[in-house]
Length: 298
Image 1: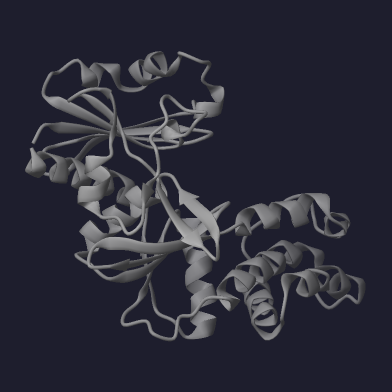
Image 2: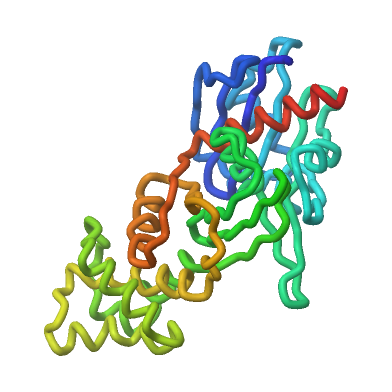
């Protein structure tokens, strides 16, 4: 295998890593140059600024995951339909420069008569599978738009998106609750967060439970500083409330930053569900695994 230049290019930032042929990370870099900051035709220049020195060698392959493959990105990498595994992704790479630079396609599936999509998360899932040596799993990738993913036989069978982080931000900043909540979230208040989780699990809808963030403050049953943690518990609890986790054969895998994976681990504890966390290394491992599959196919 060639050395791999792995790039995670999202809407707000660009991360890159140089990987040895065995998957070991040699160096990482990060720039605040997400796709929304790049003018038309400017993607090659930004990539060169990020890691052009790595790309000077002919013995490198550059794989890019994330929103760089969207319609607003460098070139559109059409969604790969589920079920999909390493081989399916590798066969549908969108080549910017054949043999040198390619963009990983996102995935699509059908949910209750409507399409669902992901870009970037599929690479993290494949990376986590490779890191953990798993071929069957239920995974959650927390974030602005959380993804719940079911994998069987090393292939993503189905996934669903929950706008959890975005709903938290909307309620936090643009609802009546904003008048009660403090300006900053502050440190996580675990008891308040658990209280929000438990209240969400007992209730029927976030449309009802969200108002309790106001009333608990009005009746002095929860201090203002604890309200962001409580509200976070409500929205994450709503996400968990609708999941069917009864048939889990092992721990649920949570993929993401330490801050978010910690919240989901705490929330899953309330349900009595064991969790296993994987961090940002999943992206690099996923791109390396795709490159390895590509090399094997060649």
